[in-house]
Amino acid sequence: MVIAVLVGLLIAAGVGLYVLMPKAPKPPAKLTDVDDLETYLQRVVAAERPPGLSVAVVKDGQMVYANGFGIADGPRNVKTTSDTVYHWWSMTKIPTAVAVLQLHERGLLDIDDRVSDYLPYFTVTYNSSFP
Image 1 (tube, rainbow, N blue to C red):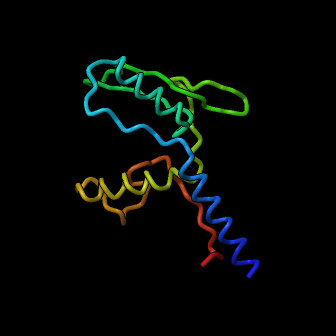
Image 2: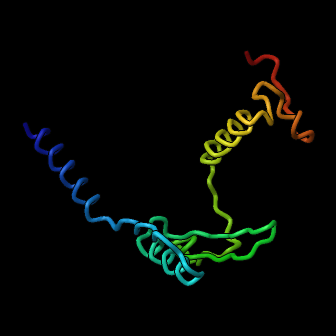
Image 3: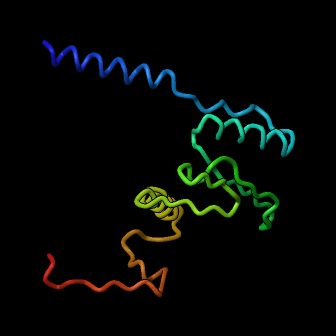
C-alpha cells in the first residue's frame, strides 16, 4: 500500500512538473523580415527549448545570415554564436542513418556498398578473431 502511494505521488509530481515547464512558442504563421525571425528565436531560447541554437541561411550557395541565440554552455555561461560547435555524441547516428537512407531511396548510393566506395580515405581494420 505504501509503495502504491509513493508511486502515485511520484507520477503526480512528474505530471505537475511537466505541466509547469516552459513550452516552446508556436512558430509564427509568417515571417516578414529578419527581426521577426530573431524575435521568435529569442522566445524559443527564453523557454529553454533548446537553451541555445545557431542559425544559418544559405541562398544560391552563399551564406546570407548567421546568428546564435541563447546559451551554449549554461554552467560556464557561454553564449551561443553562429560558430558554436554542438556536441551530439551518439545522436549523430540518427541523422546520418536518415541521410544515407534518403540517398539510397534517390538511387545515389547503395546501402550494401562499402563506405570506402564513397569515402576513399575511410579504412577499417577487421579483427579476424571477432565473429
